[in-house]
Length: 240
Image 1: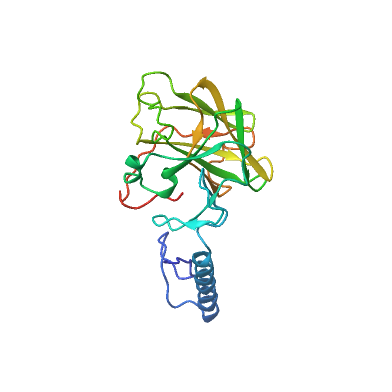
Image 2: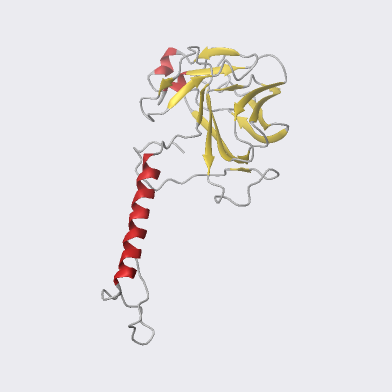
């Protein structure tokens, strides 16, 4: 970091770094730089996963585990949802799964609306991500049969997105993301049965965002993503 300051000895309008300033001025800048250094150390010392909520849907072990790729903890969903069935994708698709969360899922054959209750902080801005890997878990080949396979997502009572798996490869994975503000200490994520296939979900993730990010997002406005273009290292996992 280069700190520029205005000293008394200046020529015309040019900004000059004058190393002959008073001792008190030098001391002020030294203290300022030390403060910046201490602040930087504190920031880097904090966990980058503070406030993350990572749910492996359909996972049956009540103990959390650390994802081997992302190095962040995931927990099972049994305490966050009522109803539904735990399932695994077929073994023939297990080897192609990029992470543990793609191997399990929770399906909801009963009821028109089934909801997860995720812990959140009231007024906090979040990125909410849902993942769906069918993996022919029910052996019905629903994605390849040609008939409509579609269900809905709600945040609370508000429509978020439709999940359309019609004519997709059973090994493929779909992600849905939305920027939203938690209205309370819990955030409801609901799967809606349209009558065109059993709703299911493989994982749910909450990522807290800084208040200054996306200022147009508030308790009345949520933004669902349209497309993502990645310019970074293709082998670097996305955790946020």
